[in-house]
Length: 200
Image (cartoon, rainbow, N blue to C red; front, side, top):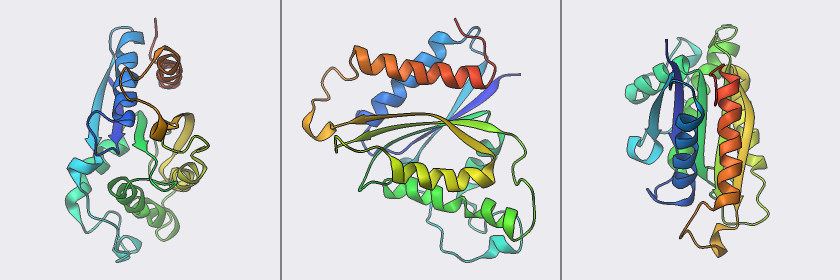
């Protein structure tokens, strides 16, 4: 049975830095894997345009969300063997559509702490964070802290992160270069090894 690798893109720009990082990452997955024993299920946060959490608290009373626009997303999220998040950094955090996805994970928090389901998702999954940032000193600390909060209730573990910094003063032409590609490729190998896919 093929492994499922879920990718979530948070950039409004189809040819922006984080989109190119994700493209390099998925190409590396296919290059390194023996027999391509996985499928990629991709979600574009801007195209999906999921509604934000309104704190209606319905998920405190029953498992799931009363807003069904993310039903397919949640099914794939729970089935995934690995999760890849690729996003630009907006004001030290996520763009609004990606932040909506993060906030809608509240349903799993309430499944755990209001309904006592331990854990809400039984499968343990590795996660890679791929980001681009205009600030040359950005370390992704705030984004990582937000993700770690939801990971504690979704049985996920951040095992790899890569942040390309200083995009405000760099040219996207020719991106990613050799050094950047090598770092992205290394992150892809980490994910494949974590889900027990043989690599070349």
